[in-house]
Length: 195
Length: 154
Image (cartoon, rainbow over all chains, first blue to last red; front, side, top):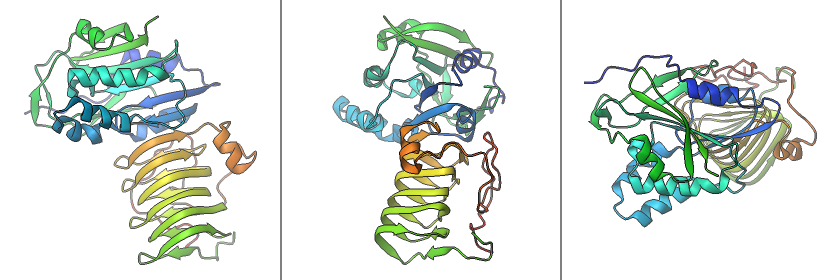
């Protein structure tokens, strides 16, 4: 039985990503997870366009489909925006662990057309623990960019514990700018596009 | 709008296809497809409301299901029961955890979507002209918990 995560997690790379955003310019943020109050509150201070994919809603469907092509269609539908502006920041919290390796490849492949040289992808992943919640929980940022855990599933499953090198192989379009192992066993990544 | 004026209500058994325009607040508990234009007033989609429409209003409160473009010149509030799919444009957006949203939220007052919908009205600094369920205008406010009091209704 898992214990709830400590609230108020300091995530230095997320804080850096937020600090780097220009409050005077239009910014485009993609939340791959479910939208939470703190995310809206944090970005409402910016001239922000916030795209919300809500991948967790489609995870059960993705996990049930055996055919890669069928899963690609689900991802395509999830990530389809009629007016796709270049991204400043992508939030990918607790999600990569729940995707198959080929779906991680597909996901980043689909995001790539929206990458610009300044795009950053911020990811949080289970790393130290061999187990993780059976369904992805949520992180709610506060005004100081600290993250608060929400809806942590007490049922646990094996964590894939992707190593940084493996992630680089799965996401060749991105290079890790910095990684930090957080006190609670999560690995924090800040990726930027290669080239 | 006078506080004594009551808003209009589309009840749960009502279904409307077409364009809704007017100068009073509106509560939708039924089904609406088409376009809703109440640019000086508030629109509330109640918990039983099902809307497949573009909504243009001063303040928009969402508690039910909405699919379409939602443009609020002052703000949009998504309550925890809301299920939204589409594009939301407003200078201030508030969301209660539990609300489901899939699509785009544009909070940039300089965005083309905002300019074209309200022809030059940018981020307003004035208080809303009609009372709303959240009762708060701060840009970093979280929407309040609890049931909504209906805009313009006693």
